[in-house]
Every structure is written in C-alpha cells, then in structure tokens.
Image (cartoon, rainbow, N blue to C red; front, top):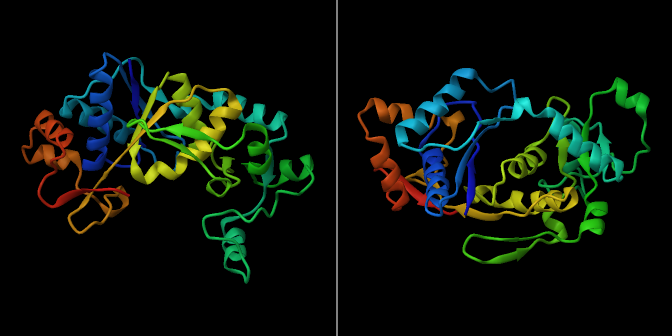
Length: 282
C-alpha cells in the first residue's frame, strides 16, 4: 500500500503543473489501495490567502481527485516543528544565524567567495549568545558537518528502484527555522510526511535537489524513509516554467472555458498535455 500526498501552497490558484503532480500522486495511491493525503503549506502567512485554500479544494474536486483523512494545515502544526528543532538543538546540530540576505549576497560576490548555492558559514563558529538572540532577529541553521558526522551520507530510493547516495557537497547548512516563520520547507516537509505516514513523495524534478537534506533530517530525527518519484515538469511550449508569479494559466480558467476536469486528469496521466504546453525534465 502506497501513501502519497499533494502539498500546495495557497499563494495563488493552481495551474496545470499542480494538476499533473496531483494526478500522479492520486493514481499511485489508488492503484495500490493506498491513501492520498492533502497538505496545505501555509507557513508563509504574508503570501497565503484563505480564498486560495478554498480554490485548492475546488480544483481537486473539479479534477475528480479525492483525498483521505483530514487536511493537514501547516500553520496549525508549529508545536511539532518546534519539537523537532529542539531535538536537533539539544544534540548541538544547529546554530543561530544573524545574517541578512544582503549580508549573504555580499559575501557570495566577494573575491574568493563561495558558490551562489551555498551559505558561507559566517555564523557557524559564533559562540551561543542568548542575549543577542533575544534582541536580534535570527534564523536557525543545521550544522551540516556535524550532522553528516553523526548520520553519514544520506541515501534514497526512487520509485523506479534506482538508489542514490548524496555527496557532502549536496548538503549545505540549510535553514531550519526563519526569522519570520516557525519552520523552513525542509524541516516542516519531513515532519509532516512522517505524521501523514507518507511512503512515496511525488513531486516535480525541480525539487530533486531537496532530497539529500531532507533524507539527512529524516535520519537525524528517526523518521521513516519514503521512496521518491520526481516527475517531469509541465512547461510552456518554449520551455518556460509555469509559475503563479508569472500568471500561469490556472485550472479555474480552464474550467471556465468548459474543459472537463476528470478527462484532463486522465490525459495528464497518459502524458498528454494541452496545446501550448509540454513535459520536460528539470
């Protein structure tokens, strides 16, 4: 039995890429008599809106995709994230980071700076200073070197049976909790997947680079290891990504044009996308 999940952020209406991912996750669960869970990733309260949550329910219903059990809402689960963070803190696997985005950008563009994808470790060696933490906004980062020493290089299995082992360079000192949010994507994701009993993480290939750090966190927190299905992305015909911020065509607009939702979901499962779009690996 496979348990999958669909975990959109309610920061806009769903588009064709969301429909493709949801349809795959739903089908993988249903073909094994498993469960399809729904999670609302609304920790970024500055961008998330209640009307978009309702839109997610409407769009999934239009596609003919039902879910099992109660909807997991991240903004209601801050206690669980804090418990996981405190566990990592207690083992000396985290440190407070006072850097602003401007600080990091400046250090990355300096001569002999670090690669743009990595954090330069500015705060890693600072002694813990409770008074500074009380007075200054800060994030909490994972000390990846200590984490890897404790848990070893993370490994994972894809849905096709292929196995992978990350390298140390795949894992940086990821943020676990931000100044303006109780948990990062990585921490909340692994805690919630475990809570929902997810056995297969279905998501776009663009999120494959998130897998090493998430597998490391699962190992450190003693959470079950799911398999992963990183599927192709639905893009515009010219290869441009679909994105809410770019006003990608929405499912509600397709519905208003008379498109049949369940038929669209079936076509997507067959690898057929509407005219003007294509499937592309990240």
